[in-house]
Length: 269
Image (cartoon, rainbow, N blue to C red; front, side):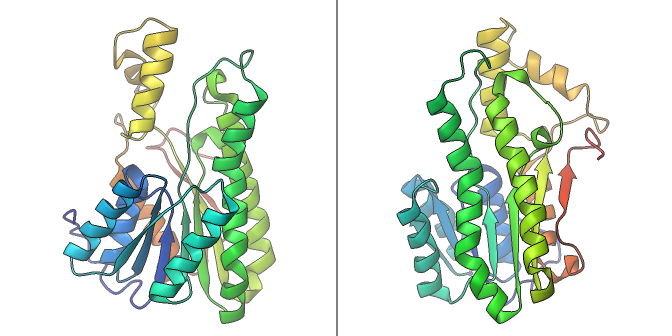
């Protein structure tokens, strides 16, 4: 398990969490943090090997985890993620909707199939996974959902991925709406809006937009974007995971319906 030095043990003791897209990147970091805080974790990823690797790291650290391979765009897969996690550890207390995709494509070349795939994975799955766990949370009068939106859901961060921007704006809208529906039942629904984070996704954008579309040297496009970040650096997956852990924990007990920026000061609204 990654070295986590923050004193977070016990924050989520006895709770059950499901994290989608947890085989790598932000999802993996979140799963490790939740486990360190005491949660038993269902590790979901479309790549079964990656899911098992993360689950194995958690178990090596003395915590409980199972790997649940599945595609969040599939209703059957979503239901099995929830069912398998609950069979292993009991009712889900924390859901982290992290799974997502990126595609760099000019808006004039965007096909309906591109749109449908993006919205299905990045937005539709967030709602229907949440819908699966919310009734139980409401009945137990406790629970937290944290979804991955993006700075792209608040600002037109790029015209080469319009459908991605739309999908993340949808996550923000769903978060605000769902939070209102269940706030009086003790259930909190929030999302985070990362900016430039050192992940495979941002490397993909640099490669596809900067190198392939604009003829830049590798890393040049990314460095230009980082020039807009007041803190002067890309965020890390741990930067994002710590905020997600906070929102999932009792420390954020009076926060719901929020779209929290993790952008190094780049986006401030």
